[in-house]
Image (cartoon, rainbow, N blue to C red):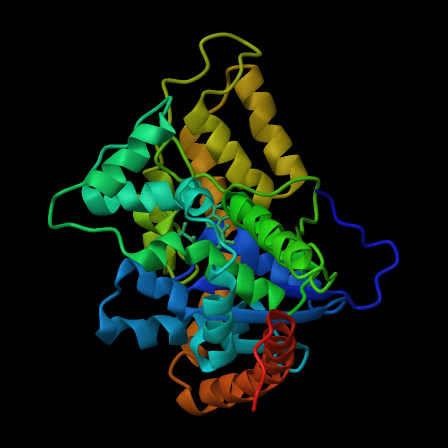
Length: 361
Ligand code: ADP
Ligand code: TRP
């Protein structure tokens, strides 16, 4: 699906990030930076998904501080509470009620086939990831597993809650990274199903939003795969200069190009991909050329990359440090955000209850 921004009259934008720890460059380029760039042109609502975080059982003592740090990171990256509705998911109880209602239209089979569910379920059960996976077998393992480890139903219905986050705002655009596209597809499906079941056109179909032609996938520094909290390969917005340089200098590389004009191996391509995000095009061009003619020195490449990442992250880090202990300001922002979000959510919930036939005496 592609976005149509040609004749926008302040389309509604909605997105959120789970409260599971500090934000990294993947979150920044996959999500937060897009939020910041959209705030002037769209009617934006951004939230912190603390209920979604519960699906992986965070330490209760940590949850609130994670919510707080993400809020500080949103603001530090440039989200303006005057321009956007900024709120915490659990401050809007209408979402939880609509999640219950929407679960009546979510199929267990389709939820079980969601990639993120299978990943998390395998992790919970200690089943090794498989390639060329046989879905039926995975489902059997998940359902038939007799160990005392278990897969909670919240994990299964994660996409229903995410669909409700989006549909409750009647969002047009949902800026998220590539890994969230399957959830977005389910959101559209649930909305369509609701419409057709109740013979209405109440929900329309939200799409992802990217400034380029496709969703960004920020690689990690460990040679393969994406940057992610659970992969332990992250550069965090809050990293200090020394930590950050150390991480970049330790990034996995190879023995160097073996012949001119060869295709970069994955670890090197990953460094180029990061450079494409943070560096000037001419810098990237310089190193690509050096790779092509075999004169590249990875030490120089990494030094430059660290420098350019720091240019992005250090100013944000300073603002995070300023903001994160300013409880008074942070709570003022989310209290106002909750009021605004609840107003929207309550209207949708009222209408959804009405469509579903729930009436008051
Ligand atoms: P993590 O994978 O570290 O747990 P989340 O799942 O909380 O991160 O992701 C929050 C947002 O950041 C989502 O929109 C997701 O698509 C985006 N995101 C996370 N990691 C990356 C990445 N490596 N590249 C692009 N976007 C990412
Ligand atoms: N599932 C998203 C993630 O892991 C977080 C999220 C929850 C979200 N609800 C959302 C993102 C609604 C966009 C819209 O990153």
